[in-house]
Amino acid sequence: MSQVHTLWKTASGLPVIGGVGKRAFSIAFTQKAPYFASIHPRFTIVEPNHVELVIPKRRSVQNHIGTVHAIALCNGFEAAMGALAEVTIPKDKRWIPKGMEVAYTAKASSDITCIAETDQEQWDNADGDLAVRVRGVRDDGVVVGEGEIRLWVTPKSK
Image (tube, rainbow, N blue to C red; front, side, top):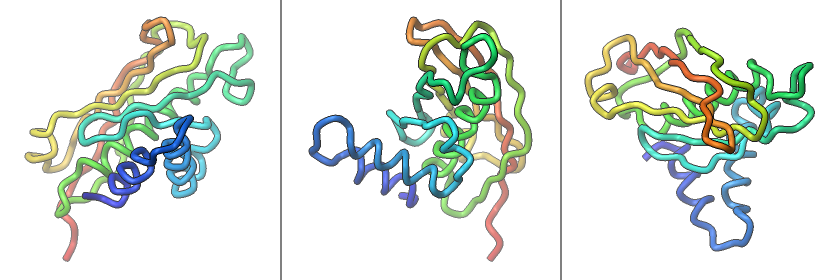
């Protein structure tokens, strides 16, 4: 189990009221990659091949029309993808982001749940490119953005 997955299992399993463990994980994750802190992510699910986090709709992530900014969505997608990659990748491989393609499909007018997903076969057979599916969903279930983040997955050097 990766360090990220171990931290998630420990933090999210704490018997405390109000999701303090998940909040602690979210803060710790943003300390590793500080730019992610700009969206104040709240991780809700962290498991191999599936990660979800919420971007709270607050002034610091809004654009000029009062919706969650497109780049804040991309930041959420990349944070979800990064956690997914860390908890899913086989121990003998490494990853780095290679590119992102995203379509904005509706106004992001509420908190946004960012979801990153893969299939285990993708990781088992990864030799170069690997596409992580991402999407953002409003509180009412409407998809506000979707796309993929392409990773470069290679064997670790010895």
